[in-house]
Length: 248
Image 1 (cartoon, rainbow, N blue to C red):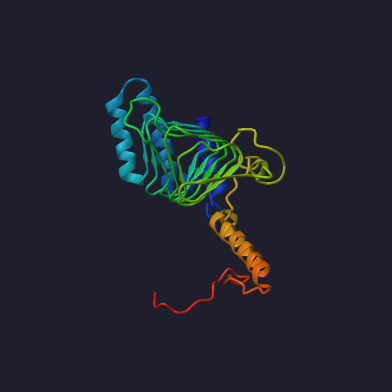
Image 2 (tube, rainbow, N blue to C red; image 1 turned 45 degrees about the horizontal axis):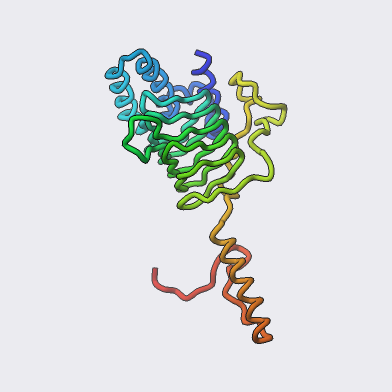
């Protein structure tokens, strides 16, 4: 029962649109999917495989979220919006994890053993991200929207792109409490829960950074060879490129 309360507290704490615990408990499909999974997982562990699968399929039908009853889900998982989320049989998800719609924790093998990812604590996985194979995503990491992760991710990392490119973080913002009063103690109270890093707008642009560095180098080479800088096209300070209208 404590785990169910912590799931409820996580959903309410991580969604600014949540107005009351009653609203979250009755109207949030991501929470319903997690709760139904916990029941299905108990049945699965007791060897009642068919009832467990039947319950997980019913949850999929009602919520649009598919969690295999064999998956191990920690406390405080919040699936925001949720439609299209798939979590495979041997996946493991830590505490206080947040997922958005379209996330897949999938396998890359037909073997019967471990073939799905292990997600650490306080990980945020953006919309449409795919984490594939028996890899581990370290705690306090952030997976960008639509990233495809196929190799292990160290703790406190950011992953963006296809295939996912990994960046280490200079600071651990995920440890900051929600109200600034202290670290999370696992009580599920909401006020002292560890803050997840949800700022998707600050995701790094690795391709853009690489292109800018290349353009800078070309400018330096042209200046060295010709004595004049032609200057490659660059985006404005607002990040907008100037180009012709190609009727697209």
